[in-house]
Amino acid sequence: MLWRGQRESGNVEDVRGMSGRGMALGGGGCGTLIIVILALIFGVDPQQLLNMSPEQQQTAPAPQQRSTNQQTDEMSKFVRVVLASTEDTWNDILPKQARVRYREPKLQIFTNRVNSACGRATAATGPFYCPGDEKVYIDLAFYQELKTQFKAPGDFAQAYVIAHEIGHHLQTILGTSAKVDEAQARARNQAEANKYSVALELQADCYAGVWGNYAQKKGLLESGDVEEGLRAAAAIGDDNIQNMSQGYVVPDSFTHGSSEQRVTWFKRGFQSGDMRQCNTFGTR
Image 1 (cartoon, rainbow, N blue to C red):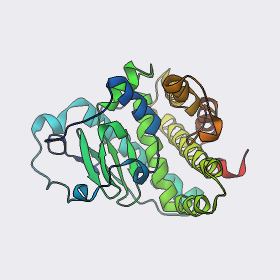
Image 2: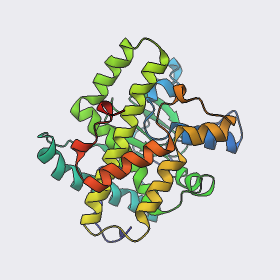
Image 3: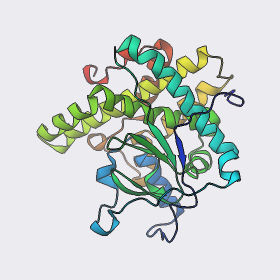
């Protein structure tokens, strides 16, 4: 991506160095954490994943002055530019295609652990969006795992992670997430409830593709960028993760979609540039 020198968003909160003090991560080795991270990336309901014990329901640490190196390091700048690109995209597209004004979310960069309106999360949770405070949360160490363990390197793959989480923010604005919650509450069994979750995740993938289309039109993409995004989408398919973690696949337990589905819906958004083509709930 040709991101250097582009506008940086002012909606990023960098709390690295404050959020992880005194936190001991327990259980499992690095490999286990990586599987958990990739299983949970891209929008699992944080309230089902985060540690919600009473003693952990506390106010987040008061922001302190960030050090100069935190403000200016390369990855922080990258995240700010990508978030700015999503802001430009949806401030333009959402009123035109959905007749709704875009509400810019915050993105918080943390280390090791963080408190959100959805509860406390650790780095093992992976990047997530919390509808309660309309924020995206990410520990930047996740990107190294995406590159080395799941062979999905590249800055566009990293940008795709953010764009997907912003897709969940769009679903909050449009009321889609609330409707899915209601449908899941009425579901006859877990397998039926999981199908709604898959549709929600695939739609966020499609929205990420729409962002990619917009970024391409703005001249931000380089040769090979789209392929990076597709590799990332394939890497975090439920079938791929289940094969890695347990050696077999259980389709009824899918909550995010197969590798093929995730690639297909990202490509649909990217090729059309039209969020109205992202109706994953009306397509088998």
